[in-house]
Every structure is written in structure tokens, then in C-alpha cells.
Amino acid sequence: MNHHPIRQSEEHALSRRQFSAFCACAAVALAAGIPLKRKLLVPPEADQAIAVAQIDEIEPGTAIQFDYPSEGHPCILVRFSEEEFTAFSSSCTHLMCPVHFEASTAQFVCPCHHGFFDAKDGSVIAGPPRRPLPRYEVTLADGQILVGPNLIQAKVTS
Ligand code: FES
Image 1 (tube, rainbow, N blue to C red):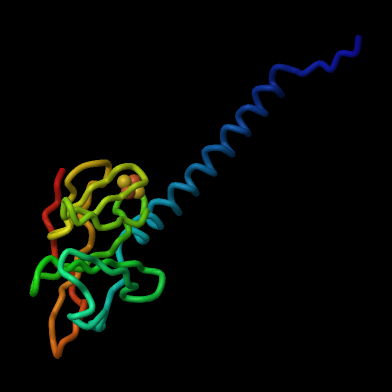
Image 2: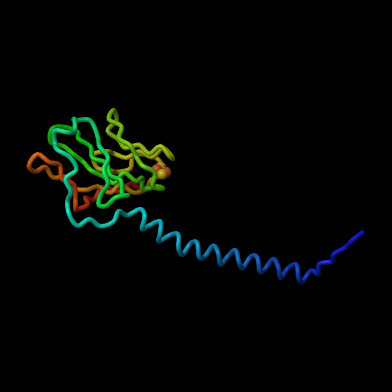
């Protein structure tokens, strides 16, 4: 029989090394991950409004997607009535899945973990998200729908 004796002190030293490496990796991941997650969940600052569509291009009770303030930052604009519009970042505040508008309930629905947001103010109705969807101001001018640049605060549910 072929024996490969492992001294107990070496075995413990290896375990301590592995544990130290694990702790170092976890610390790096935490240090890098948490600010990154926070950064991703807050939309970049917008410095000017953009024209998203002509007013008559969107029927009441419907929504359109657009990117704002730059490409790769999906947003959603909803028209509730002749003059009532809302615009939000459409990245769920839980883990960034895209939300979609459900006209029958006037809610944004996140299919990933069943998050629900009020489509009028972006507040959380149900599910794992804790923060409202970032909401942009909407202005109507010269037949156009302008979005941004200011964010509007919504109530935070705990
Ligand atoms: Fe939206 Fe989890 S990513 S509920």
C-alpha cells in the first residue's frame, strides 16, 4: 500500500492559506461589488431634456421605450390621458431587469422576481425592490414630449 503521510501541521497551514485566500477574495469582491452595484442602480446624470416622441404618436394607455440620458440606459414613457405622462428608468431597482408597463393595472412589472411598481410615481407596490424607479420630469412643448433632465423624487416604501 502506498502511503503519503501528511503532517497535521501542514494540513492546518494549507487550510489557513486557503481560508486567507478566500477572505481576501471576498473582501475584494465586496469592496468592488457594492459600489459598482450602487453605481449601476443610479441612472447617470442628465444635463438636457430630449424629445422622445410627438404627442400624437402615443395613444393614451400605452407606453414606449427609449434610452436616456444615453444609449444603454433604458427608459419607459407612459401616456395615461390626453395630458398625463410619466417617464422612468425601466431598470428594476432590485437587480436591473427591465420592467414593462401593464396598462390594466397601471403598474410596471418586473418579471425576474415579481417586482411591481406604480406607473404614476414609480413607488414600489410589491416584491423584492426597496427603492422606487427613478422618475424623470416630462414636459409638453410644440407638439413634442420632452423628458428630463431633472429627476422627480418618489416616496420610498420600507
Ligand atoms: Fe426586478 Fe428582481 S430584478 S424584482
